[in-house]
Image (spheres, rainbow, N blue to C red):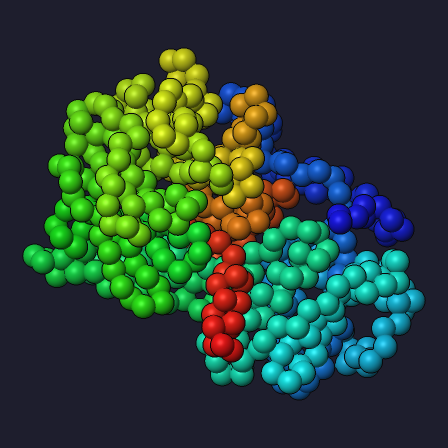
Length: 465
């Protein structure tokens, strides 16, 4: 149940809300300017004017490992952009019994407590206003030396978000992206949603020049596999990598052309991808699980690329240059083919440039990047499905590309270029709050995983059996 945060909130909450709305249009950025550049586009606010509830984190009990888990949970809740977090609470506040009156005096709406107990992290969420235990859970926790310690704690953090808001969190997820190195190689790398645990996951090598380009990754619904495009054969082809076993599969090249921008169907078995072959291009699917069934979705003289399915698998969004070379638009059509309809803010005689769409896991929004002019910087845009074409611009500075949705359907990761260099950024669509995920590297084409909590729970169950 989502509760109203006007219940006895601090007097300054409404002031902060108004101030945030004013600051979001500053400095020197006016809504009229945005309308002129992106007709029908509103500037970066889906903000509902609610104050954020205050969550206090009571010092976790159980020694150094408990303190480390507490720090991870505090950071995760702050990154959720749903709370104002009160952490660094004095150890004197660590008590067996919860004193609701005391936490109420400190201004807390919610209280999170935790303790280590028999190899598990026990977490409780208390509703301070109503003076009751809202929910609790027990999460298996490996030793702090284990590479899974952080992920196990992230799962507990997401449970807190779920208990309070009845919506998924983003802590127990990862982001894979294409990174170009100084020697010209380009492989896939992976990082946790909090920017920790950076690791390389591919080392593709071409037969001739010694290295290959790996790009355009996409996650399977179970979070165990990644499909992507690689030039390791000398031509762009689609491959699937099992992150647990290292097993690799490929889509057979049954047609002539470049195989690019793959994505999974929600069934986790089929992948859709583009085949660029001049006047005989289109979007096709192939069942990697059964290793069969090459099927056509669209086909023509134009280039249809970057497909993305709606969560129920009934529709497909993609970009295409059907209106002319150099002016791609975002289109939406039935997943088995049919008449496409423009989603991007197309204006006659000002066709713009829009590409790299991705459907939100909630099904209510489509994110992509683009520009209205023939030249200029790209910005991240979001079209609201069923809202008469309403489009929201989420970025204002630099060059920004390739947005990808978090499992909560509220956050996006995208690659950005600033005057100080390139980075991956995460933006909260509801408030516009932005943070840097990784910097100091040429990172592009990021893809956000689904929640990995079910995967880790299933693995833990298998280990017990």
